[in-house]
Structures are given as structure tokens and as C-alpha cells.
Length: 263
Image (cartoon, rainbow, N blue to C red; front, side, top):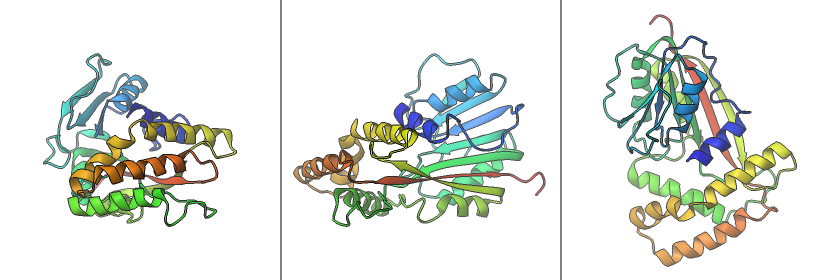
């Protein structure tokens, strides 16, 4: 999870966010904080701001900056934050964990102060390329199909970018000044550009660190496929990840928007 944070920070040129936040923000919420690394970095960057990280799992460190705190919370349930109490709501990599995206953004809208900002980062598990090197019958395409099919069975979509879920849900919630930025995360060290190559190498390393962990639940528990087939799939998939002749990337979308000053 911390490596995912590193990959995204590289993609953003070292930044923690893209929304035009003011220097005097007072209260920030990080939804799905995981290990809390983003919340801790944000608390260091804004020492006079209270940063709250929420997650279903208590896996955050016990020692933290004095202005950050972590809470066990389910973002799909009714939010308990006071209406109009937050300056900024940050969300990332919630795909597969949210059934009702429009409701999530409506709750964020209610919790934000007038003029407050929301920002959401999501990636789609669909390998794309610009030169035809990702083949239709590849393990990379099977990876995408696995999560799309499993997500449908769970009622939790993985087609966040393709279906424009972030932007459309944010707009429906009432936000204005909506900005959409599409990024490409290369997979592996194939790019000629040194910065993109570094991003790709880190992305590949992050993924390969826990391939079975990413796949096991969806493959075996949700779709009830055999473990032998999974191991064979992962063997082929690893070969493709390490093949510099395959110029694959994952689409990532950043959307940020502002709550109006007046209704």
C-alpha cells in the first residue's frame, strides 16, 4: 500500500494532491486511508490542520504527528461528520470497495464546508497500449475480465474510468469547477523516458509483490475457479509483466471539484 502511494506521488510530480487548496485549511478527511501514509504526509505538510484518516482496518502506525488521527469507519455507511465541517476530502483506490458511488459523493458534499474541495484518484485494471502489443488473448486482458466479472457479481464496479463514475457522480452531487485529469501508469521498465520508466518499474514491483493477494479472493472465492488454473494464469501474467516488448499501461483518473459557496 505504501508502494502504491509512492507510485502515485511519482505520477503527480511529488505532489500529494492537485486541488487548489488554500494554506489555511483546518480539517481534512482521507477516506480509505489504509496504512495512513498519505494522511501522515498531509499532516506534516499542513501542521496547523487536523487530518483524519478512516478505514475499515486498523493497520495504521501507533506513532503519528499530533495533528493526525485515525478512525475505524465504513464510508458506505451514514457519515458522522458534522455537515459543513471539512475543508478537503481525499479518496483514492476505492474501486471494488464501493457499491453506491453517487451516495459516497453526496455524503462528502454534505460534510464539506462551502468552498471546500473533493479529490478522487481511481485506476482501472484494464491494460491498454498505443501500439497493439497487448493482445486480445493475453493474460493482461484476462486480468481485466477477472475483475470486471467479479465486480459485477459483488455489485461493486471496477469500470470506474470507463464508465466516468467519478465525474458524473461528483457533478450529480452538486459540485462545481470540476477538473478531470487522465494519467497513464506504465507497467514495467519499457518507457524510454526516465521518469516514466521509474514509475513503471515501481508499478510492476508493487504489483508483483502480492499477485496472489490481488487475485485470490476474486478468482477462488467470488468466481469459484480452481487454484491450479489461477497458478497457471499468474505464471503467464508474470511473464507478460516482465516482457519489455509489451508496452502496457493502466488508465488512472484524477477528478477534483469544489462545493459552491452558496446553494
